[in-house]
Image (cartoon, rainbow, N blue to C red; front, side, top):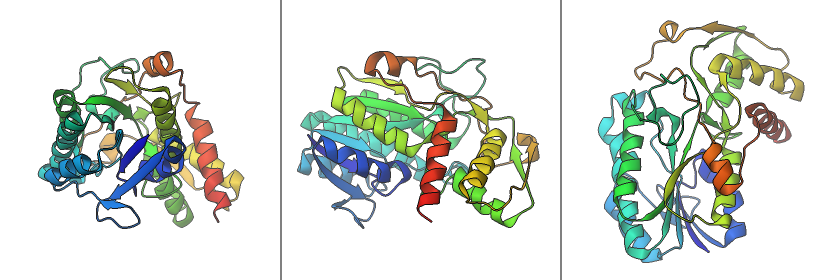
Length: 296
């Protein structure tokens, strides 16, 4: 299997560098080509189409995205270029070459008004520019004519990169008290698990184009996640003491972008069609904190 990995220096991309080589030959592309085999500038979608057609891979894995949720509110054109126009170009190229396009999307395509975990066919209603741009990317891929697998995931973090886990650990070392939003609920999902699941899906084969939800089991709030981070980090020796973690409302911490109050994803379709079930989010946190502790 010849695989083109786009976004190879992001949270998920770095983990995919670990899991994809077992499947075949992997060409890694990053924005400027640094620490990679090729450059793939998502601000220039036509160049992406040319890259795919030149390399003619069997599979294109798109792990690149504009993920600055709040900044997207003031940079809608940039978010749209990366999250919608670039995937559209990739889909057109894959339709020409016959490659499978595997693309990641987000729980933020939903508005958070559900009383149960979201299924793949539930109506979408993004609350902000980021979610809207990711939904537009999904729709562009579906209309592009390529064989595709769209994997929606949620609350992604890793032992590397910029994410909630690493931010909380940094703040915990600096402050006696943290105030964290408690009225937004989701499922924190390690990038490592997403990469492992991706390799499993590609190994099994994608029988028909579709959309699947890929997220850790269980649910928690950002406040609950922060509390668990402190407990695990203390146990692993990453923190000498735990700060107080106080619950606040979204109204207490206003941000440019609105976020869904409830964005848990139902993963039953993934289990049924690929025999794949991710463990509980607490297990993922424990493994990721352990990785951080071992790297010290």
